Image 1 (spheres, rainbow over the protein chains, first blue to last red):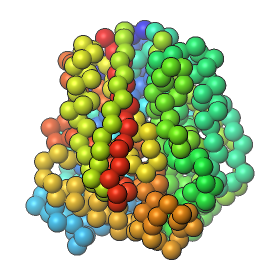
Image 2 (image 1 turned 45 degrees about the horizontal axis):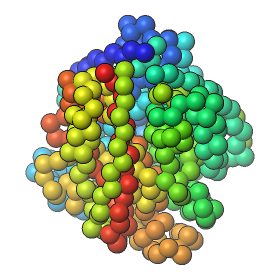
Image 3 (image 1 turned 135 degrees about the vertical axis):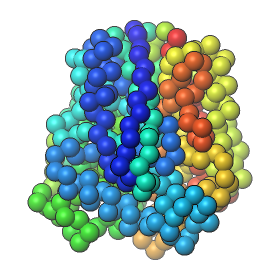
Length: 139
Length: 139
Length: 139
């Protein structure tokens, strides 16, 4: 049994989904692990992770639209506003999605379904550099 | 330290919760692992996982009702509609719940609380066959 | 490769966030594991886990306010009301956040970002004693 970790840094262009599937599969391949579990973890509270459809880009647009509707920027409900009108909504969206996600490794490959991609979900309007830790364990 | 994996396929009857606790405990028992961690992963973007109450079936009815209210079928917000009025809502519900879930194994048993069950959450209206990967590691 | 588990019990003062970062780091330190993965799991269906900002307490207040708005106590949508007007909302909030969360361990420390804390999210209005299982694997 062995494990391997990597920290990756991705620059986002503001609110958007950024695919990380390649980086995650890359760590699995480098590790030589055939059977195991990969975990991704985002080291921020205003960006998160989702696994969602990797085919039609409209899905990403619609996901963003839904989360903007349910947690609008500048929502009068919030009192934590010092970091901007999109900061507290970003924390809420992080709580509604995932900070960590685990994917089994089968035959040296992430066992994603055909239409699944792993995405970093940037919730702030401005570009940010986001750090994601990848951990794989297995043999 | 050892690990074991299994892929299970469950036919859903359309939008509903389908309990997977038995299958997950079954893999743990087969593995002989006494202390460890079980991870469940659903290989789809329009079905997800939740751990919720396994006692009163009204809880399942109310969960479905809440998610239908917050992400209604045919919502005019969405432009990804080619696969039907319940497809994009299914992707959103998947993002709001979990694609992967991990449960510690203690004494050869999933360490679920008394009222906890592991459920597949089918978000589409039509029946589907859903594939779930189970992975357990430990000793 | 080795692992270690601990069950902790925390009394909540009703609806609130209760930080668990210290307990989780404590288990990692006791285990002597330098490189690995910590998983936290809450054994209840009306309390959950979130990783969120540990700096400004207004973030916690705003998170609570958001979840109360999106799933109000006594919501007429729900028929599972026998356990009180805040019970079914608690189950929904659990489904919207996380029952399990995993954090990589790097150099003997949880690899949390600067502003990240691990929190138990109590959704019921009354105080409860909540059991959380911590599991760490690595070497």
